[in-house]
Image 1 (cartoon, protein in one colour):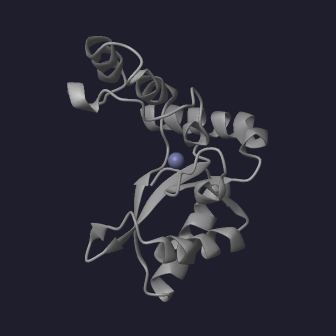
Image 2 (tube, helix red, strand yellow):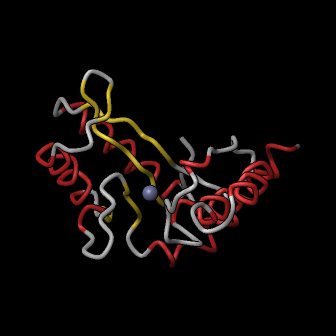
Image 3 (cartoon, rainbow, N blue to C red):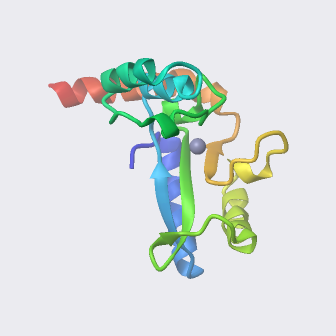
Length: 155
Ligand SMILES: [Zn+2]
């Protein structure tokens, strides 16, 4: 799980609290490179061939024609700075997308941690999505953090 330290602790508490309440959750996405974001943004907007060219350079598997549909409206997202994660409640290890009461129990924990939940948004509801409040103000420090981390991994 790759997230910025300011989110890491809260993510840990979220997972612990879910466990305590007997809610099983899976984390489906954390850090996403800008290249990956670009590839996702192109989906449903350009030809399959072009999408897969960019996906390949981002280290992603190619997609099929049916998968070439719009999956994001953002050219930049808090995921690109490790300031967001996506999750889904599970039952017997399987994702449960349509149990509103279950999502709401998770949301209560998220709000207590002073994080923004995508399920509270009015224009584009994104229930799996959780992000740091005012994430834009942490962009610069987060960018430096991940660049430094990448450098030290190459050493
Ligand atoms: Zn997300």
